[in-house]
Length: 188
Image (cartoon, rainbow, N blue to C red; front, side, top):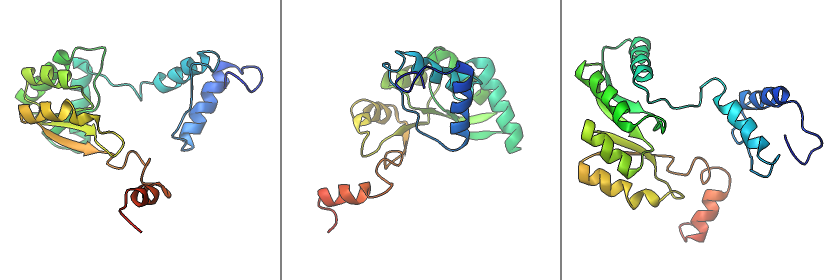
């Protein structure tokens, strides 16, 4: 969009084109620092965060509003397991968990789930309020969680919910899984 294919197009047109691609089902957006240079990454950053739909917010006001909206949409008084979908690196985890703890104390949620957190973040969060579950990618291509995160969760008595066991379709689509199985001696 910003290199190698003729002169750069107006930013507004490239944003509209990228949003159209996403709305049409495109799920992979390839970029590099050499495109532009740097302008393609900046452009995609604007697309991703233009309306906040891809951002993760750990601010206490946002968490409260999001929880109360979920309660209303679900038509329930309490959410059994509230998932803090990702860690907002702009807000200290203590602030995020502090608000979730207040929601537990108010009876609006029962348990707290962290998603994709480092071991050190899990420890800091757990000192504010017990974390029930950590959700993480643990797959054939993502094994590094065994080094620090799994032992930390085991030590603190935190459950683990693994997602993307086959690597976000990396291994589950087409002949890749069959090829992997054949090369590892599992079939044939």
